[in-house]
Length: 94
Image 1 (cartoon, rainbow, N blue to C red):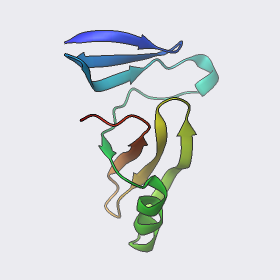
Image 2 (cartoon, rainbow, N blue to C red; image 1 turned 45 degrees about the vertical axis):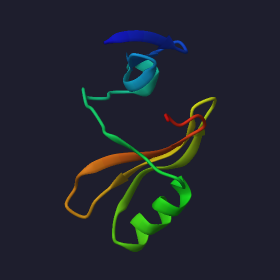
Image 3 (spheres, rainbow, N blue to C red; image 1 turned 30 degrees about the vertical axis):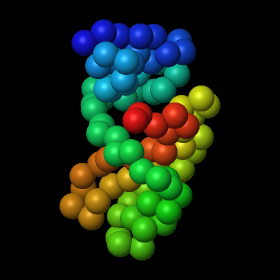
Image 4 (cartoon, rainbow, N blue to C red; image 1 turned 60 degrees about the horizontal axis):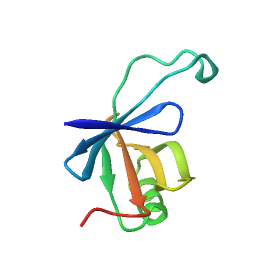
């Protein structure tokens, strides 16, 4: 697995020509953030998933927002306390 920098503090893990994951550096401006990880699910409509999660009793950790040159995503919580993210990519993989 190879890595590629993306911006100042993000690194993308590449599986050949396809992105397969990434890591974000935590800096002091973010405040006290414990080490953590999150899974992202690719979706066709981030805002629709956000609305559906709320309707089904989920929680919103981060509302839908645009990631320049990447896509639109949000971070959600299920009623049991699990956290996950969804994203609609600008350039989805084949």
